[in-house]
Image 1 (cartoon, helix red, strand yellow):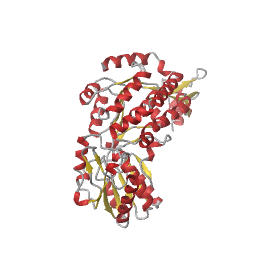
Image 2 (spheres, rainbow, N blue to C red; image 1 turned 120 degrees about the vertical axis):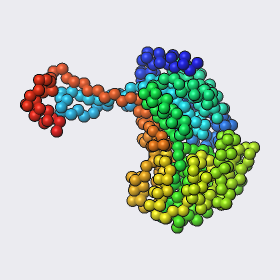
Image 3 (tube, rainbow, N blue to C red; image 1 turned 90 degrees about the horizontal axis):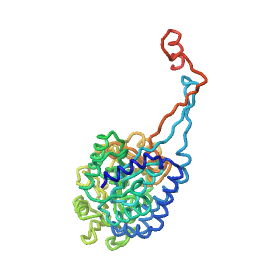
Image 4 (tube, rainbow, N blue to C red; image 1 turned 30 degrees about the vertical axis):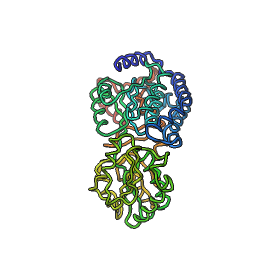
Length: 455
């Protein structure tokens, strides 16, 4: 089935219809219209799959897709036109420019934690760039996957955009096909597999993975505001966010005050008993639920630690006095468990972060701008914030992506358009003048001329 769809999409792409600017704009408008019509159903599906409130579902999923569509509709005429660049004197007389060209057929494989946004937002970028797409929503968010399949099926012919379903077995066969670009959001191990599949076809791959993203709290941090912003970023979607603060590195002078402030913020946001708060998200399935519980060290739990096996909810949990040997520090937590490790200065912070592979994000809280700039310059990570968490991924002017084991490539806004585009470099040479010095036979005079131009 997938091979048949892929064949039809390659034929449709070859027809050149997706190159037309008005075709892309109309496709994006149709997509937005369909999302608006099904918005209630989408939010309901997110509630069933992850127990997300309408507020959180709109803020972190549907609203972000609307924003991306709006950005592309406004910027596509600029992004798709040729862009003049400077021409060196050695190429005189000529003009040089770059032009964005779609790759062809892209495969988009999405995860379960933000099942709507992380499927449709890259699709928006893919359509804007002029590609066809095969989309694979996560089977672990079945209600949202169903809505996505129905939504895409009602507005796009499968020769242009198609959504396919299935679990791991279907994923394996899906990856055996030859796409022009692979786009994947998810775990590191699957990311390695997709990179291998892409390499076999010499196709580009954009991998949005994860890792243990540190949150550094310096001695001069504004503790009440720091705690509020950490609690927001960490317990959003019950910690099931690739850029969530994975653990805290707190200066020993403020660690105790920070822990107390975090406790107060959790109660303020989710109540005395988050397990009965209908707006507090659940863990996606039993396997993830059991895995997260195994990371909680009861001896170091100073807040939370409760859970409900029926609803698959785990309360926001703080592990105070954690260290790098703890179970929670051996893997990405991806849940509502927050270890707090005491540090003593910049060098101990940097050493602790470098114990793990390059993280997807880094968050730095403190008033000393020199220290923050030093961290940004010296520590390898995908992106991040100074004195806030997670919001860097919602800025159209910047790309979102990882480095090393946290991913490769970036998207969102202009970077999203370019992630799905090959940038052609063109020199348009004049026919009126033809400088002779580059042609054979060579001579000492020609060599002197070349040296002059290429010095």
